[in-house]
Amino acid sequence: MKKIFTLIKVFLWVVMDNRAIGLIDSGVGGFTVLKELQNYFPNENFIYFGDSKNMPYGEKSNEDIIKLVNNGIEFLIQKEVKFIILACNTASSLIDKLSSSVKLFSIIEAGCLASLDFEKQGKIGLIATRATVNNKTYEEQLEKISSDLSFVSYGTQDLARVINNQLDEINLLKKNIHQAIDPILKQTPVKHLLLGCTHFPIVSETIRELYPEIHLIDPAQKESQLVQKFIIENDLENTSNREGKTIIYLRQDHDDLISKRLLKELNINFESLNFIN
Image (cartoon, rainbow, N blue to C red):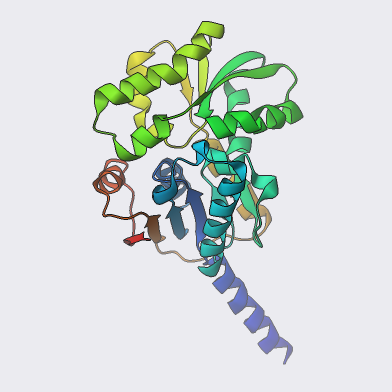
């Protein structure tokens, strides 16, 4: 009887570990985080939920953001994910107010730790949505781990939306990039710029073209390291030797060509792409 009980425990443990990792973003920006995670964990399964229909989150009230993100969390929990990564900085800025029965990972924590990898003291530029900047979560998180480094931040109103919906309009894109970064440089020169919205790494090449003197910090790699540590410490590794599967759900009203193009450009492997209302 004891041997049978042990076998049942082992079987349940394997099933649990093979559950997918969930990701939430306000649109397609989290594809950059998804790609990094796929590189780190080739055997893990992923379920991605992007709420393009309601983006940009950064221009909504905190009450509306919390409601939308909680709906996304519930969607992923119903898919039986083992934990959820908030690939959206705006959602991460309200992590303490969200409801979840599984662990939530904040991309903001990863961004602060990544910043310290490149600058120990002084100032680092931060571009993010207005909600992320107004909630001051980056500053509060950074204060917990360093008193020598601070952010010079600016909340951009439209850049994430342009990237999500109008990526091919290059002049509009460059205009919005300038509107996001120039106010920071007018305050103080910075050597490093933290991309505080997961949409922004999608246009990192354009940003480097416009500001070649500034080093860009993408939190996605640091986030993968934090997730790896959590997986190991909690025995949550996917025990399968097969390549993991990724299922993508995008909430929007129409078939999105930009989403499909980004998936191809980022070389993201996925099992299915689902457009939901």
